[in-house]
Every structure is written in structure tokens, then in C-alpha cells.
Picture 1 (cartoon, one colour):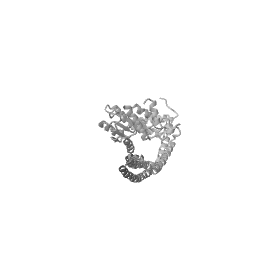
Picture 2 (tube, each protein chain N blue to C red):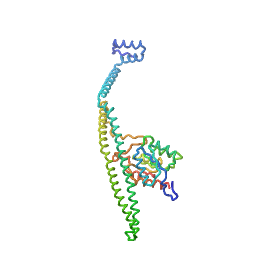
Picture 3 (cartoon, rainbow over the protein chains, first blue to last red):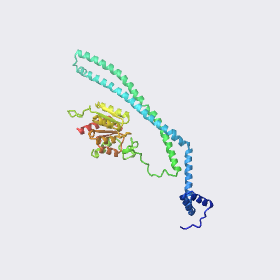
Picture 4 (cartoon, each protein chain N blue to C red):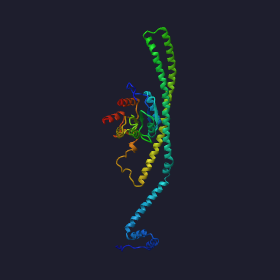
Length: 247
Length: 134
């Protein structure tokens, strides 16, 4: 083993060496000898030490940034609640609307049935083939038809108004979603800030990463179909694709 | 499933599968409008499969994206079960990637409808499915 004669061992180092050896820490003793002999190693250790301190300080700074803490503990849970609210409101609106629509269907059917019932005798009248008893019967039926239609028209009008009012969810959910978009923007900025602080450039990637997909490529409704070539835009596209493959 | 005249028997037992109750309601309403009266519901592929194994269903209408068992996996399970493989399956879904459509066709789906869809589309696809089987 060659000896580096330009290296000077210090008293502290020698004492430390004895300490290691006396306590049986052979590895540490060997490391210390290696350090003493090769100053380059100690420069490396110094660099690592410096980086570790920098990392420690950066991490401390983040802990001191209460905005991040707020985001994590208050705003994100709040955003989740808000989005759940959107789901609830839209579900309510959909059900309200469908309730009104389902009430209207039988009303319309009733009117159609009554018109069909009246029609044969009416046609006879139009062709001057009605006898008097039939005429009386027709008058009664038409009277009922008029009264029913009048009453049911009012009901339909009210139900239509219910449908109109049920759309009020859009305004409320729109406002809530806007707030969540603001929050997401803030988290995005914080994340970019964090990447920058660690010296990682966020402009490194040349193309924006594709949206995350789950099992079986699930992605949910496509919101940017115009910018993509891997999706279909309507039912005709689907049918064309399937028939072109022989399905 | 088919009445003696060869026309579609609208008494057939249909299972509608979707994790959103509003969508199940819409599909159920549309099917009722078309004359189907015997309609059951499930809120996930994982709840639908036991119902199918138990219940002599004639037709399945299902969503794709569901948290427990996806529609595509339900379809595969149906096709893999000797007692169920004959059941026609219609996918109604917002999943619109070409790869997914091909995946579904290769897994043996009988029809694929993308959301948003119209009542007319549903009607046309149903006709097509049952015409093909007749």
C-alpha cells in the first residue's frame, strides 16, 4: 500500500481513530484512514454535506410556508366537498327535471287518447253522416275534451316551469367549479415553485403529458376532442369505425 | 326471447347497469317508451354479475366506467360464462377512444353507444342488435 507523504494527520483524527478501534468500529476506522489518505474523498463528502444542508434548508422553508399547509389541510378537502356538492346539485336537478317530464307524459297521452276517441264521430260530422244521438254523444265527448285539455294545459305549463327552474343548478355549480379551478391553479403554481426550488426545470418536457388513464384506458368524457386524433367525436364516428373493422 | 311472429319480445328481462342513478333512470325511461316493461337495475359491474348469474336475463345495457367492476370486464365475464355468454350486451358510455371501441368489439359487445346520445340512436341500435340475432 503506497503512503501519501503529503498528507498530514491531525491529533483529533488520530484520537478519533483510536476511539473507533477501541470500540470495535473497524469500518469507521478504515473510512477515517481512507479519508486522511485521500483528501479528494473529503472534498466529495464536503460537497455532499453542503447539498444536504441546502436540501434541509429548502425543506424547512416549505414547512414554514403556511400557504402550502393551508392548501393541504383546508383548501383541498374543501375543494373535494365543493365537487361533491356539484354532483349532488346536478343529480337533484336531473331528478327534478325527470319527475316533471314523467308527470307530463301521461297528461299528453290522456289528451291524445281523448282526441282519438272523439275523432271517428267527428269525422262523420265532417262528412255530414252524423245522426242526432251520435251528435249528442259527440258534443258531450268534445265538451269533456275541451275541459280536460284546458285543465291539463295549465298543469303542463306548471310542470314546464318546474323544468325551467330546475336548471338553476348550473349557476350554482358554475360558481363552485370556478372556485375549484382557482384552487387547482394555486396548487399548480406551488408545485412549479417547488420543482424550481429543487432545480428541476418544468420546461424540460417538450410535449404536454397525456391525461392519466386508468385500467382498460378509461378516461371519462373527452373534453378536448378537437385536439386529439385517438378519439371519436359522435355516434357516426363509432359506427364508421366498427363497420370499417367488419363488426 | 322472440314471439312466434319473429318480432322482438318486449317482455324480455333487461338489466341496466350504471353507477349514476340518473343515467339508469334515463335509460329505463327510454326503454319503457320503447315498450320494454321488465327492467332491473344494478349500480356496478360487481353487483350486476351475481344478478345475471342468478336471474335468467335476456339483455344487458351497461356503462363502461364504474368503480368496482368496469363494463368491459363485466362483458368479458358474461362471455366467459357458459350460462351467460349468449346474452346480448349494449355499452352506453362516455369512453370514446378508438382503441376502447375496438377493445369492446373484440370482447364481443353487440352495440356501442357514446354519450351524449339520443333516444333515436338507442332505438336504432336495439333494432340492429335483435335483428342480427333473429
